[in-house]
Length: 320
Image (cartoon, rainbow, N blue to C red; front, side, top):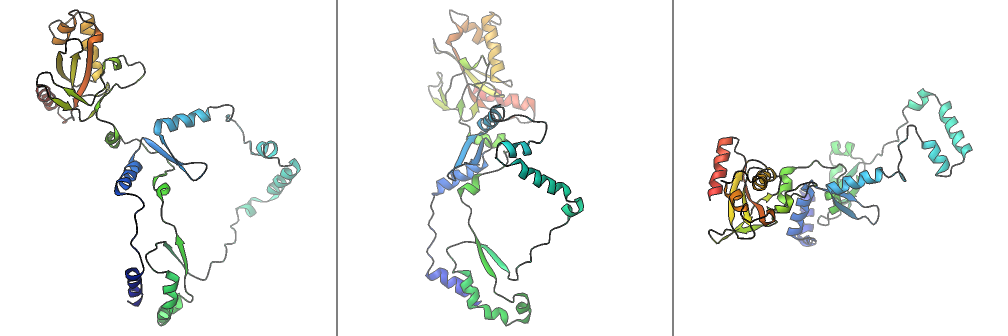
């Protein structure tokens, strides 16, 4: 009770409240950054800095360096001796003497356990440093006589413990990870901007027709609507909007396929003059070119686990 009272009184009288060196918003941002799996956070080689890179860029840079034959080459034998002789400047006679001593030593002597260092008699009390409580060694010295009153504790703790402090974690300790994290697609979606975007993949012929936008205006209602999810050429189970840039005509459709596959069907119908009874092919076959067409995904729906219910949901959102 006396020790507890001492610490509480010290906190009450002398300790100042901890001042935050980062805001709550910055603290939240650090927590989100730590959870992200599409970035790699590593310590820099110099100045104790931290490097943040995109996961793809980090892997690409690592492979680029490993495949650089000027700095790395694949070997089929141990090159430690060659490296020590040619690169580090050790004399061959010195290396030969060390190798000879190692070869002359028996396996039993090599595998023999080393004599352990004599342990310290004093108990080490390890704790994380904090500016709030009073110095622990002062409190322990002041009340050590209470420990010695009991024969049981007197036999266990013959001398006062040695107080050792570990430092608190800093931002670098919180963020740096040795292992490359596995991608968490559900988590990554939190950091992907909402809107309609081209997928940007090499060889995608549909990106040129996909409009980049985070909202759209309905010509029927005259209202603007926000696109609340990230949709690109590879998105499935979506509601999409086709617009004619020349006359402003709009067509809303739905598909369980990717947006790219559905657009390919529309483009094929327009280019081959088939399915003229469909609104899109009928319109764009009239003194139009494919350059007048633009498409954007306006809503992506979650699968319900039942194909019929999922399609019914898409049709409801399409008619909305």
